[in-house]
Image 1 (cartoon, rainbow, N blue to C red):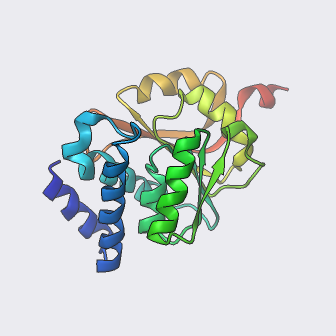
Image 2: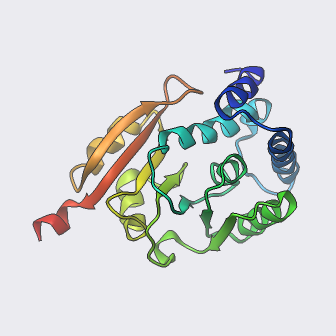
Length: 212
């Protein structure tokens, strides 16, 4: 997907208003400027930021479209991908979880500068986030699937939709995870990379607890 194709994809899927475009472009500018101070995205992806990061994040919104009302929790948000993109493109409240001080400060700065009233940041490890009933949980490059589920299951209910980009390792991670976790799992191909995939899950629960 080229950068022009990425912008066209966003317009077609979200009917992006001028104000929303301004926020997206503002976020990209802030992200690239911050790269002078900390490594937020891979240097090789700078020329493809709209496809590799903005659309790659935005595609998760459609995959979670069946979710009920409630909060979106994004684990290990880092540069705000997908958290900031979701906050710009939807009205759903989103909490981004990040443990690194510089990235917490960066995310709070983006929220303030772009006026993202529905977005917030929890500064700390995922395991320390107070128990919640998230409508959607996302995680992009956060942890292998079994550890991800183990650290975040207290934030979910059986209705929570999990949208988890996993690159080329999706099927392998899923096979490992289903030894100790059960639920409705399926794999979707990424619109930005034919070789990458996204695990979508619901009704996730530990097999250990079921047996007990």
